[in-house]
Image (cartoon, rainbow, N blue to C red; front, side, top):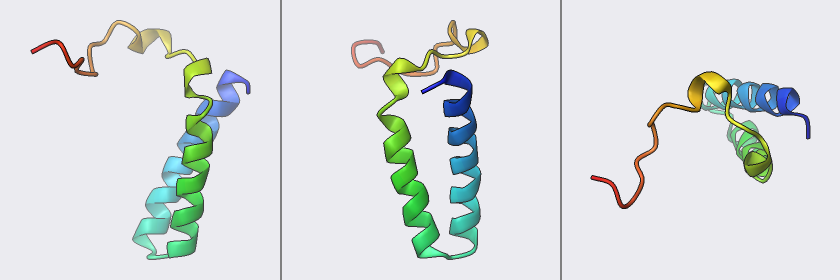
Length: 64
């Protein structure tokens, strides 16, 4: 999967998920969640954008 397509799909899925939760549509919410799970399979193949590579956002288990 191409990098730009993956980022666009993740962004759209996040927006649709928020809209579906606010509109109380359970079927749309579940379908957005399934799409997020499918997109998660490609996460290891997609590099982080350069502006986010040097940030320490994620806490590693050994560090305190």
